[in-house]
Length: 97
Length: 387
Image 1: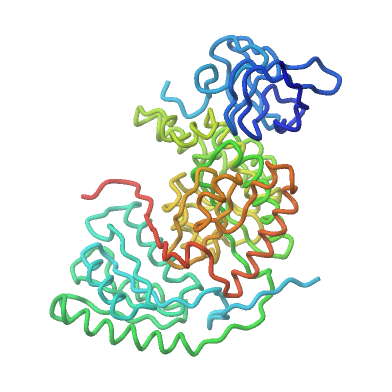
Image 2: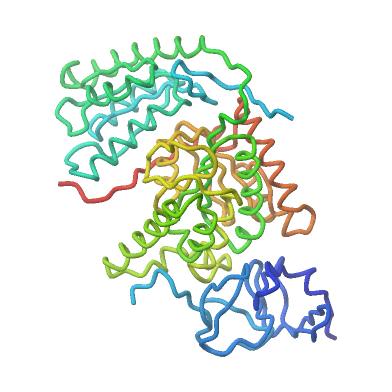
């Protein structure tokens, strides 16, 4: 059975412009997150404490926003409800090339 | 309401919140003797380091400026310089530079005193006299506008930008509102957030200098052919949920608060203006703290997510945990828990007010965890290798 939880109870969305949210505690796969005025999010994989969840589909090459600011670009297609980290997001600054 | 604390007013008008006697070797060759002198008179603080000789140009000047700045810091009541006698940064020169601080500065030279044992014995005698002098000084009521706070974050996690740094930033704003000075450092952790800081610069010159500093450190990494990623964000940052350098920076710079940036200074330079000041420094915490101490910081506020125990030789470090699990796990190192923001129990403003209250208490003499445990880590940023 799937549990439905309010998004803001388990995640922090730092800015309305953000397409990722930060986990307040570890979240299991399969949890359904409800939010006002928008469709529920199915959490597709474990999101460890402090890590980021995709709030919407982010296509490869598209920017990722946190704190309302650009923190890098998606290096592969990211589905809503997936973990966003070094495997699918890369920064654009401080790089040798 | 007028905010005050009880501090030490120095003869040159500066205000200290601690009353240390510093044993300062001007070269690595005098470090062992300096440490042994401090072992004889336990209240004295040795400032051992690996520098001071066979350094050239801007690198030598920066080391000298850092050592002199730390000795000049108003948390230091008196200084015993320990020289070898043939080093680049000589004890007599440093003594002359410290004259304007109007504090007692004594000196002993190993080659003149007749070797290790005699220097320890004579040095301990001098240090004892300086401690007797310092013991006579008394705290008095001081306006909070005399506070100079250095900010730091280290061992960051994804909560740093949500809990620890915003609350530390609120405390920074309170210090500035009280008329004090806040130093924001760690230039490598401004990369990707410099545009937000530049918008708050007092004028276009301050903004341009800030952007120049950020590009300079980014270019330095490029010139070395190295990728900053791997060192920044560090492996522990990544394990804590920070993915990119921009993400780390955006979360880091908020610890300086939201005030106008009045001035941008080089590493270990003393600001000439009050308010929020940016000092160029590496992201490496202990080297960044050394720069802040040399620029006159009396207290360091330090947020950490992964948990770091580091302190400083002459200024109390207030450790602010960004998450409750780490606050509990490393309770002997953490002074304040900002994890309550993640837990949904407090706001950054509430925690920030607690941090500001703690700053006033620590300024009046309350010991921080890092002081109680004797953490006195120090490193000095270098611009070139030894010659």
